[in-house]
Structures are given as structure tokens and as C-alpha cells.
Length: 308
Image (cartoon, rainbow, N blue to C red; front, side):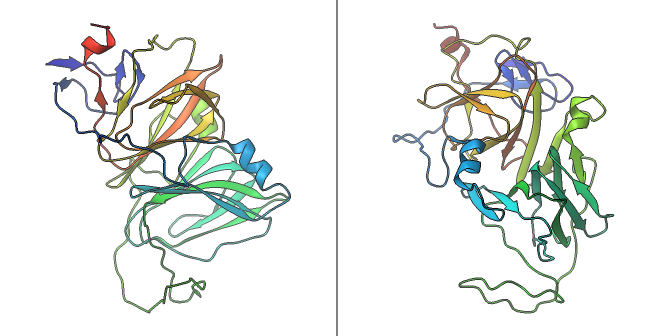
């Protein structure tokens, strides 16, 4: 057994920033189950959705949506919304939803909060049972990544007309209780303030069924690695990343190493080895998303990494 020393809530292993855990975590060896047939990607999930390709696919469209992550744990859509377009007022019964703004401007209306406008780099969230809506403002479409847990349901206030939904009837019910914001879940983070140092690097989402970690670093000062380093994998949850800034290098399963750019989405199925490193020459940041607050990271034994 050995202890892994931590920075202020952020694990710094010999192979890069990997997770947020309490200090002085003991490490032991264990047998981890992995499928005989390696995990793979099931559509619409794929190793990388390149934003440039999505924009080319939808060139000339102002309103469009593309599902980029969908599994039992998480769901994410890239959504473009034309100027002046406003969503219905809605809420989710039992889980948070969150958004990363990629382009344009969106005015958010969230129950209990003053309306505010979010632009590129803003990360916005809403707790369960809080009514919200959003509207594209300005003279160009807005583009956002919208994230929720897998299979999340959407409800509407009684004074709102639910949209026609194939296979669904909406019935009137009585409900109570609402989720709240807390120290680990702020209404929004402006990523530009993380860059200039006025907002501390931190978890953006900390919930029972969803986590989003801001991981920022300098490729010139990160610790070296070797080809033997496969990274880690997770037993119970997939993981995916939104590239907030710069370039991130990925090694996932048996795929060749590839580079993801700002706005790209990268996805690793559960029980698949993966490794992320800062790439290029400038600061780089990824928003890492999965389904558990203290998600287990399965690493190779040190003997493997040392080639013994």
C-alpha cells in the first residue's frame, strides 16, 4: 500500500492531473473486471466529435441540434438557436442540467435568480425542479452544449403548454421541493475569469449523479509520460470532455493518439483505458464529465509502467 500525495483537492500523479480526491488516499492492488470483448462506441457516441465538422454539416442552418453523447449515465446535445428564439419554461424533476456556451449570447431565466446573459466560455447550471428558460439575444445564433443525465425527464409548469412529444401524454400533477445552489454548485462560471485567475479552478458540477471538473494546465510544465502509460479506466461510468481552451492529447483504448481542439467533444466508454494530456504550446483546459462524485480510477500497477 502507498499514499498518493495531493494538491489542494486535486490529485497530481506522475501521469498528470487525474481526479479530485481527499488528501493522502491509500492505494492498494485489486482485480478489476473488464469485458472479454473490449468496450466500444455505440452511436451517437464516438471517440471525437469535431466542432469544425459539425459546423460544416449544419452550414446555413440557424436552428439545429446534434446528440453527441448518449448512454445510461449522461446525455449531451450541441444546440444552435436562432436570434430571438426562446425555449419553453421547463424543469427537470430529479437532476441538474448544465450548459457550456460556445458561441453567441443566451439570456437565462432561472427561478430565484436575476436573468443574466451568458456568452462564450460561460458554464451555467440549474438544480432540479427549478423552472428555467433561455433565449438567444443579439444578432447571431447561439451555440451551446446541453448536458443532462442519461434518460432525464423534462416537466413543465401548469401554465406552460408542453410541446407535442411522440409517445408521451402530459398529465397534471402536484409536486413539491426544489434543488438549491451551494458552495460546490454555482449558477454559472465565466471561464475567462478562470483564465485571468479571479475564479479558482474547481468543480463546476458536484451532484449525486453527475460531475464536471475543470482541469487546466500548461503542456510545457506537465510531467512526462511513456508509451507504456495507458492512463486509467472506470468501471461504472463513461467519461467525456468538452475542450474549453487550447489542445488536449488523447490516448483511448487501441486508437492512435489524437489531438482535440477547443469546442470538440471526446468520449471514452466505461471500462476502456484512456489518458488525457495537455498538448500544443499554450495553456489548455478540458471540462471532464462523468456520473459519480468519487469515481474510481483504475490504474496500471507500477511494475507495468516501469516496464518490469
